[in-house]
Length: 308
Image (cartoon, rainbow, N blue to C red; front, side):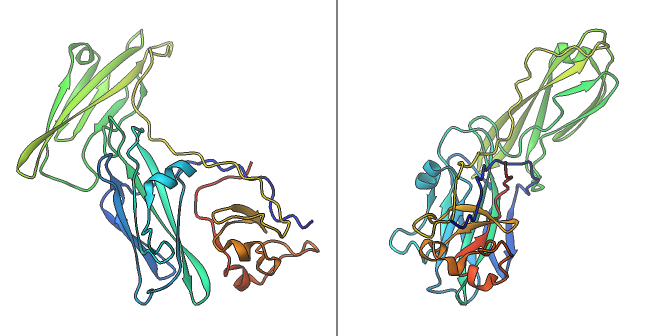
């Protein structure tokens, strides 16, 4: 049996993503046009762009779980393999999450991959929420920022600093969505709570949003405060895949394998199960340099994974 891949445990690793505005992800002369921020109530529309891709096979993948993919990654049901657009975004009451879309596009008989990342608001917090540290040392300068990264200037901000927090900070400055101060040194650690109300006009109506952030100012013995409840942005874990080359119905569309030092996603499962399109090592263990054949069945995997 020619082993194509070892056990692959897919987990997310931290990565910095651009979170606001409409950004065009350009790869291989293709791009996915779509938002990098969607809300709980309004999923995003993502469209593949390039002249002359009519009747081209297109397959959409994401780092959603299988359940989420089945329910929240929607393509044209009548022409699922020709759909240049998808809608994505869950209606679950989830924390703030990042999602990555990946399109496999047939171009002159070979598949190329195009990726696009977006952030979805959580139930209680948004992608552009109140940012700041969870804990600081006494004497440290601190910045809290709720300014939207897209540079919106129509908001007004009302900062609320309760009496307890006011006792342990100094040099306080407020500049619209930014609050700066110096945390005072204290013998005992202190948990401080800050709140800001953001007001903006939407469709002629005033819309209010409230954001709260907690900070533990560590005392001289660095004691921890009681639980800090600031929300965190979460990634979704992918499923564990145990894949081996047998040449018979081993791989399905979307299977992720490790082969020849790279990771691949199966696009055409009939060809994926044909050794002629094997992207991994040859039977004698040497590298398979015929990637032109492999590109007719597989694409490079752009999801942030690590091998366990």
